[in-house]
Image 1: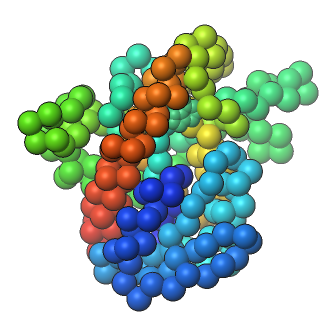
Image 2: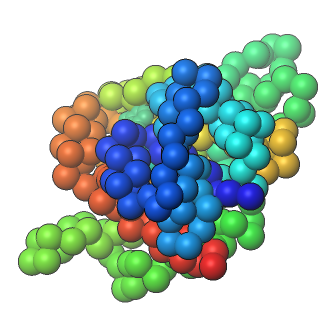
Length: 250
Ligand code: ADE
């Protein structure tokens, strides 16, 4: 059985495909799934694409067609909590859908038929992911080490908020943050897929661990920071994390 490496970004995936041993590409459900070995582990590489529906389709295929035994999801996110800054890493403890609202039929954010508003990542797999990150960023701190051109991030663990929109204004970001806090949640960052992936994994009892690098602050400059970050940093960080995670598995 294999580990699924689910990437949000094509750049993250392309570098991993280059490293894949005994690589085989299988086309299924309109998507490419790359099977092979990475750091001694059997893996299936797939792209979540953007948004909750696309991500759910990809992860359902990984589980049903490729029978993966665990999922590692990597990508970028916009910082919501004041302490979460560009360049930081957030290991997800769980996900909530910030754009889900079936009130007054159900409480705000609650997923109908599940009696819950958040889906948690697997504790044991998340512990492995945290160990992998700790190994990578020993003594890490927020910001860039300009001398070595290397990212030295701050590591956070907590709740991520997913929704089908790129959050690109301080007003929108504050509304999401404050709305979730009013319902008892403490979201660290916002992205567009994780809650869907977590819900599919929950239904199939497949362990999930997820990590996001902070590309922007989900504010008025978010689109500029996002593009620069993707170009300069995101895929490099994702490769290091995937490598360290797979080595921890063996
Ligand atoms: N992923 C990275 N930055 C984001 C943002 N500002 N909104 C939604 N998803 C993101």
